[in-house]
Every structure is written in C-alpha cells, then in structure tokens.
Length: 271
Length: 262
Image 1 (cartoon, each protein chain N blue to C red):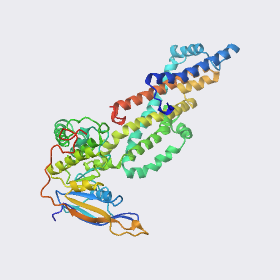
Image 2: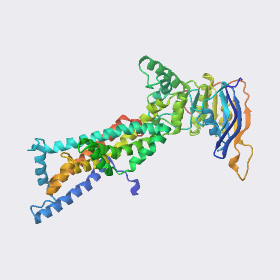
Image 3: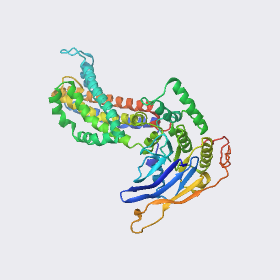
Image 4: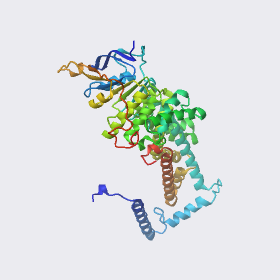
C-alpha cells in the first residue's frame, strides 16, 4: 500500500506520536549520564533528579525575600500578562476586523494604516513602549498587543471580505441593514476564524511576553529563565521551558475545543 | 402602466466592454420569465441589474412605476445557484432572518410572543417547501436540493414583489431537479409570484416559463468582439390556457412523499 493511503488509527497515532518524544528524552538522558560520568558536578545537562530538586524549592518553598512560591508567582504573572494581551487583541480584532471587513469606506480609510502597523517588527517598538508606558505591566501587555493585534485584525477582516458576495446580497434582499449584516451575517461567521487567529497568534504572543520579561521585569517565567541563566542553572531553565510548552499546548487545546463546541457548523458535517 | 417591472434602454458596460445594450423589457405581474442564452451573454448581469446588485451604465428600471434605488431591497427576493443560505444558521434561523431584520432593527433578534409568531410563520413556509421536518439542521448537513428549498423559503417569507432565480437548479441532479420544478411551479401558483429565472437548461426554461427571453449579441465585430453587447433577441410568450395543475407527486420523482426526500 502506498504511504499516502495509509490511515493511522487513534491508538496507533498516540503511540507513533510518543516515539520521537521518548527517543529525544532517551538521547538526553544518555548524554546527561555520559557528561556526569566524566564530571559529577556538570551543570549543562542536569539529570532529572537534579531538576526535581531545584524545582522543588521553587514550587514548594516560599521565597525568603518576597514570601511567594516563586514558580507559581511567575506562572501567574506571565499568564496574566498573556491573558490581558490576548484578550485586548482578540477584542480589537473582532471590532476593527468586523468594521474593516464589512464596510468598504472604513476599509479604504483604515486598511493601509493597519497594514503599515502590521509590517513593523514589534520588538523595534519596545523602546518606544518602555518610554511611553514605563517599565511596568502596561508596556509588556502593549508589546503583546502591538505584536499580534494587527495580524489578527487583518486575518479577520480578510476572512469577512472573502465571504461569498451572494450571502451579503441575500441578506439585503431579506431586508438587512449594514448593521444587521454586520451583527447577524459577518460577526457569527468571523468567530471561528477569530479563534483560529488567536491560536496562530499564541506562538508570537509567547515570544513577545518572554522578550519583554527578559528585558525588564522582576517576576515572570521569562524573567526567571533569563535570571538563572547567569548561574548556568539548566536544572531550572529546562523545566521552565517544558512548563511553557505545556501551558501553550493546554491553551491551544482549550481554544480548539471551544471552537468546535461553540461553532459546530464551522467544523464539518458531524455536529 | 400595467407592467410590474419595466426596464428602459439598459446598458451595462465594464470599461470598454459592453455586456448588455439597449435592453428594454416590460414584465407583467404574475409572469414566469425564463432567461436563456449562451455563456457570457449577460444573463446574470441582467439579473444583477434587476436585483440592484449592479448599477446599469445607462437606462432606468421602474418597479410599479417608481425608479428602483441602486441597491438590493426586500421587494426583490433572490435564490442563487450556491451560497444562498447562511451556513451558521439552522434551517429555522435562516428562515426567521428576514422577519427578524424587519421587526428588530437594532438586535435583529426576536423574543417572546413576537418570536413565537415569527416562528410559526417560518414553520408554515418551511412546510410549504417540504422542510417541515428539518428545522434544526444546518445547511452543511443538507443536500443541494434541500439547501435550495431553504433558500426559496427564506426568500418567500419576505413576500417579495419579484423572485429572481439565478440558475437555481443548475447544480442539482435530474431527479431532484424534477422535484424542484414541481415545487417552484406550485409555489408560483399558490403565492401568485412573479418570477424571473436565469437558466442554462432550455428545456427547463420552456417547461416552467410563461415567457422565454433569449439574450444574445445582435451584431458582432470580429476585430473588437467586446464592443457589442447582448440584448433580447427572442421574446417568446408561451400562451398557456391556464397555470398548469400541479400533481402532488410528479411522475419523475423517485420518492413517495409529496416533496421528495432529497
């Protein structure tokens, strides 16, 4: 049988997907064990035991200075920044994208501006944000917002513009005004695409979050990674990176699940 | 003027390409006009002009003697070949949409007693097109024939003065097409509709219509074929004694129920 025709069942899929991950872990363990055999105090490739030990103090022991459980405080701070940034971006993508997509005069007026902002590398704006909003939370949230909102706005607007012309005409023959077309035809059909845009923007949003935290912060997952880098603390960096990956996967799964749940009509025939 | 719709000297041009030239028509209330013609002869352009989706370069259109505004409105209903129904609304939601837009300008949704009244009206209309049992399906779950039935119900609930059909049955297979012909003929009689239908199928045009218009170019310049537009070259009134009686179960239908279960 040709490979293009091979169908993988659910169980086999999980099994096959796990193989490379397990292999990678195995390669790491072998390499780490090798380095530790040569030098028992090696810091570059820590063994799982060392990682667990280093993480345990961050997870369960309050920090002497602030009294926080550092790991959880970092997670909370980062998720809060990410959440506010994503939330603002999503909201503005919906509002602006809807207006740009449905109303040609608005598109003609503001389309070039949104495109212009979208092509600026957001990190280049970071100094401006620091100057304008200070080094606090606002500038970090703003970096995420400026980084992903223009892309999301353009994506949603393009999706609405691409709705079949027949639908808009049909709505008008049924007596719909511009407002009603926006509310009842464009908005509901933009929603699944909006969730898709959030999922695609999650990666960049994390990049901007970690960057902002690395440059100026006193708490957060990115801040911690860049802080312990000074001591070559791979035993903390690696678990933190794994944790960020887990969080990203969890958010992505949640979004895709809610899209299927809330908008079954947009996900194929099996409602 | 007795004509419901009158087109006077309509021209449609895109740049220097002339699509329609000197189209003048009078369409009587209650007629079923089929428009046929080769591809690119401006059949759909003419329909879009009547619909208000496209503004003619020259000429005027009057509905009941008043000039039509240059945009679509609820006095002209339409069924396209595809994309006529909203994929995010159920059958019932699609049909309610027209009533909701008229009665709730701001929210475009109805609640309570008004919703119940609208729902009843929508259900009656859906029963009339044979979708009485599929109220909660989404368009993606339905066959092409069912989607077109829904599109017709959706348009008719607004009681349009004119129903425009743009190759409505072009994508359907022959058995379902026959069911749909019976359906549209029955609705045309029951609701005293005025219908203008664009079609590729000449047999369909003559079976359904009370008048067949053929659009084509009268003149042809081999060096600049785009400089002459199409116009109505044949205008054939089909004199029938009366509107044909509609058999409940047409012979071509392969199904036992009234509407076919396509």
